[in-house]
Length: 278
Image 1 (cartoon, rainbow, N blue to C red):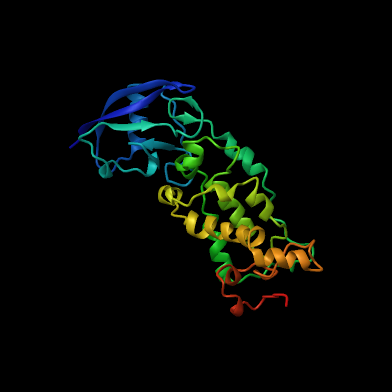
Image 2 (image 1 turned 30 degrees about the vertical axis):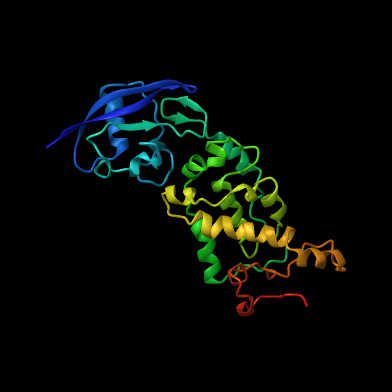
């Protein structure tokens, strides 16, 4: 038996507008995106909404449902209190285009500044990796670029410091590259300065909203913070660089040449590839 619920949907253009209420018929198994499509078809033909797969894999239908960043296609009505009006609005962090559609192009411009995976010229073919290294970076590759983590990040959302911080999604992209055993580029300077990893205060709000359940903070941001701290702020390593005959070479004492998972997790004595200098 179908019932009726009230949905307050943001209507407007370029940040100017207001919520408009719609009564929609609710049936078992529906998600928020189903209701938005129903309202679009029956009551508001000009309602703008971005979507594609309706399976939680394209990341297109990101919005804020009752104030929480969510994928509309993965938010079941059975998980919401339908006795109260359900609010649906566009992501707050990015400029509004129209209704529920936002301009997320800044994310792609930032992503284009990150150099792609670059193996060394003498890297073996095929690339041979330990399974734990594969598993670690594979987690980051699950990202569907829904940008919910960017939306909830208070540095971008509340302070609009896109000039200071790349945001969780791009930090995870950098982690995916920097933790790859065969990536030959030294990305530590970029992670520290352009990406601004030090700005993150690890509230883990980005991890909480990730629909792919990526441990963004624990497995990505914190290890990169530690690596940057070891390189630029560890006094012992600073002295070593100061007096080393190889001062012009970034120190590699903390990690083997392949920067494998064992080294990142401080189990260097078990790393078969470790080449720690005396």
